[in-house]
Image (tube, rainbow, N blue to C red; front, top):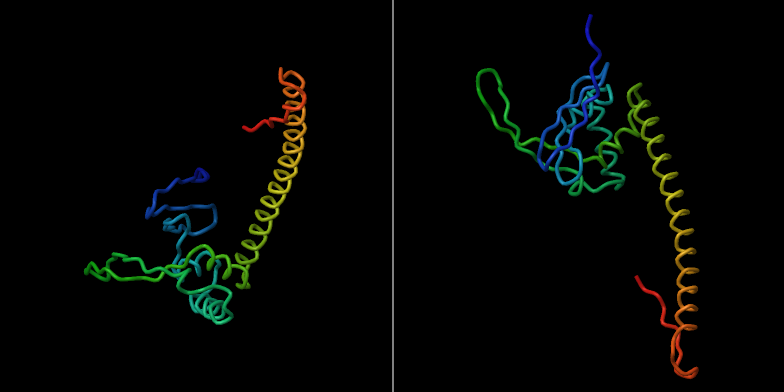
Length: 173
């Protein structure tokens, strides 16, 4: 009996290739560089469970519609692989996370649907976390303003200066 695969978490340095495995999904070598993920069209096709031609079509539409800029989302990486017995180095186009997400919202496959559901869930979580954080920051700012006024009042009262020389000092961190 096979043991279930454990989820692999990876911390990658710039330009590092990381292997991701998930139960029931093909393994992908993900290129991490400049704080983003880079995939080829073939890898996106594997990820979303469709043909490379579909990925190419969606990317062409994304760039034609000016949803994204090609220069900002495409990078050539030199890939070394074997073709028969020959070791060949080829420049292969890779697409960053922005392009991957855009394609994921256009592909009409079961994996594409799962991707959209996952992306929507993650986006909601981040929005809610941000909203809660902003509310907490607002409350802290109100408390700080109140504390600053209290400190100003205390300092003003305790200052041994003449009444005409008293000015609020203001607490600054």
